[in-house]
Structures are given as C-alpha cells and as structure tokens.
Amino acid sequence: MRGRLGVVTERLIVVGGDAAGMAAASQARRRRGVDDLEIVAFERGHFTSYSACGIPYWISGLVEERDALIARDPATFRDDFAIDVRLRTEVTGIDLDRREVTARRLDDGGEVRERFDTLMYATGSVPNLPDWATGDVDGIFGIQTLDDAAGLRGWLDATPAPRRAVVVGGGYIGVEMAEALIQRGLAVTLVERGEQPMATVDEDMAGLAAEAIRGLGVEIRTGTTVSGVEQRDGRVSAVLTPAGPVPADVVVLGLGVRPNTALAAAAGFPLGPTGGVRVDRRMRVAGVPGVWAAGDCVETLHRVTGMSVHIPLGTHANKQGRVAGINIGGGYATFPGVIGTAVTKVCDLEVGRTGLRERDATAAGFEFVSVIAESTNRAGYYPGAEPMTVKLIAERPTGRLLGAQIVGRSEAAKRIDALAVALWNEMTVDEMTALDLGYAPPFAPVWDPVLIAARKAVDALGR
Image 1 (tube, one colour):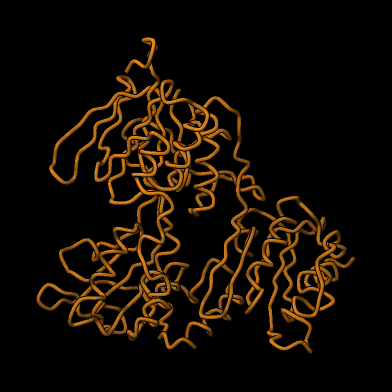
Image 2: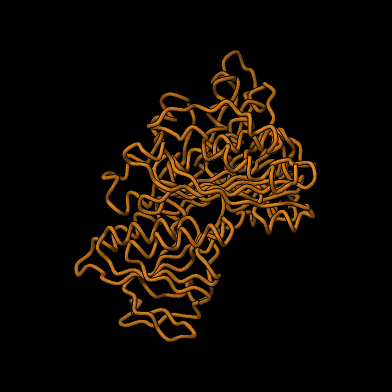
C-alpha cells in the first residue's frame, strides 16, 4: 500500500483481537502515523478488548450489561486508532516466506489473503476439553470467550430455566462460576479430580477456601473424574462419575487452558517446553524476523525459578502486548517475567497467592521452610475484624521469600501485593520484618499479618 507522497506503507497484521493483540496495535499506532503504518486486526469472535475475568459476574447478574465488560469496541479502534478490525474472521494459515496470512470469514465462508511486513501473533489460549465434551450434546459450556459466555447466558435465560448445574474443575474459573450459578438460583455440584478445589494454593490453604465454597451451598466432590455425559433429547441430563451419575441441566467446564499455538506450529514458530510460543524479552518470536507474540499463547520467564512457564492472566497479556507494540512502533521495551500473582473471591472469602507453592519449590530444587500465621485484618477490638491466614515459603538458609498465600475476608487479597513486591525484589523474610506498612485500627493490627508471618518465618529459619 502507498501512503501520501508515494511512500510505501508498512503493514502490521494482528492475529487476535483481545488484550495482547489490541494493546500491541494501539501502542504501535501511537508511535506510528497512519501514513507510515497500516494495521489490520483479525478476530474470529464478535468482540474486541473485553474482560474475560468479568464473565462470572455477568453470568451471575452482578454486572448487568454484557457490554460493560468491553473496554474498546471495533468502532473505537477504527475511528480513534485507524485500525482495520475484522470481526468473525479467523486466520487459518501463516506463510512466512510469502509474508502472507490466509483467513476465512466465518459468516459467509469467504477466504481472504493479506500480506504483512510485521505480524503480531496474539491468539490467546484454548480450553482443555475432554472427549465427552466435544460431541453434539447441548448444554455443555466452556467459558473462554465472551461469545462462550453469551451462549451460557442464553441457556440460563431460556424457558424452562435449568435447575441443576455441574461445574467440572475447581480452579479460579470453576469456583467463580459455581458461585455465579448459585447466585442464579441453581443447585450446583463442583466436581474436582484433586483432593481440594483451588489447587492454585497449597492444600492447607485450599481447605479454607473449600469451607467457604460449601458455605455457599455448593456440593463439592473431590477425587472424582467425569467420564462422560447422559443426554435426553439432545440435551445434557447428567455427568457420569465412578460414584454414579450426577444430574445436570447445564455443565460448565473449568479444566484449565493451554496455549493456542496450532497455527504458530504449522507456520514454523518455535515452541517452548510449556507449549507456548518462545519469545525474547521484547516479545519477538525467537528466530523469526518481523514476527511478535504476546498473551496466553506465549511462555515467559518465572523470576523465582528462572524457568519457562505458561501463566495465562489478563494482566500479563496487556503488559506483553504493550511491550510488543512499543517495539513495533520503533521504541524500546522489555517484559521482565512473572511471579504468578493472582487473587480471587469466594463469597466474602478472598484468596491471594504469589510466587511458588510448596510443590513448586520442591520441583525447582529449593530447600525451604513454610510457616502459617493467623491474625486479623484489623485491630481485634475494631468492629468488623475478621480472621486472616498468611502462609510464607522462604528459602533455606538465605531467607529469601519464595512464595506467599493469603486467605481471609475483607482486606485480605490485596495484601498479597505487598508480598508480591517483596518477592519481586528478592527480599528476605528478615528484611520484611522491618517493612514500614500502614497502620490504623480500621485497616490493620499494630503488627500487620504480613509482618507477623515474616517474623514467624525468621524463627523457623533459626535466626
């Protein structure tokens, strides 16, 4: 394409129109003029730049409008950023030699080919689906995209409304969806093959979350694997387990995700041990000039272990996309890695984690101590004081913080941020005991739970 004065315009093709892809496109546009860089973004769904993390709250009704989850719609990208967003168009092939992508319009089946000078690969992740969930039975839903959520919402709003739900998988999305379905008035059974739901924290901490989940009225079946489904008139009627069928009018899958890299692999992109695309700190695909990747489809560095990991979170996708876009636009930026900080909520119980769990530390070869400290979120005499449990994992003998977990009520989850900052900066628990944290009775006891846990870890190290 030629811009004004006959100058050849560089063309950026973006594959994937959610967090990483559109963050990259927006940053590139801010640094490159319309006559200098043409941007075309392909998205196979109906939406761009939305909060997948908000889906459970729209399903429950806490968020009333679907569009409240959308940060920027295609019209905004077209009008404000001069980005040609093509919805319902799925890229089916990437030819690195010809510098060309092939795409299919999902609404009419038409095929298009578009050249590129620079390619941004941001395909996200795909859900782990068991064989029994890939058939023709209606009423089984993965919750990966806003399109998926719209399908589930339509099923729940139909007449007659479903009364019994089974959630398969007890990770973040499974637990949040179980709560959402309870709030919709369904009877909910959560089936988890592990010994506890919330395997993102250690079992002792997960047990506290399990109590809160049961307190919502959710039946939890642990150590259980779903082997299939029963149907009636093409609609799911039960899931099958070794202990017998569990009745269900709707089934929601929360079995985790994996990098969406089939297209990348076919094009010859290098994949790492996690199955994600291998990128450098600037988000360039290793050994493939002019090609960048970011978001759930890539693997990244864990700053504690130094190993490659795949931790699919919207926070990472937005940061990585921004880094890629700055670099595509001619600037310089790097993504320094992750430490796995995450939070969630079960009713009024908050759960936070950062860094390594005990099993992660063992697998990485660390010698460590772990301690659990019980405290309260506020001064004990102040109204609204609630118990809080903090777990720290520290390296032996250095005392370096390796990981932390918090379970408690009001003001619990965001305390993980202080621990994440300490971990990011490789602080020892000895140093953490002197942290100058805020104190007032409405917000913390005079010894904050973080400080109490750090002191306990120092004692466990024999200081």
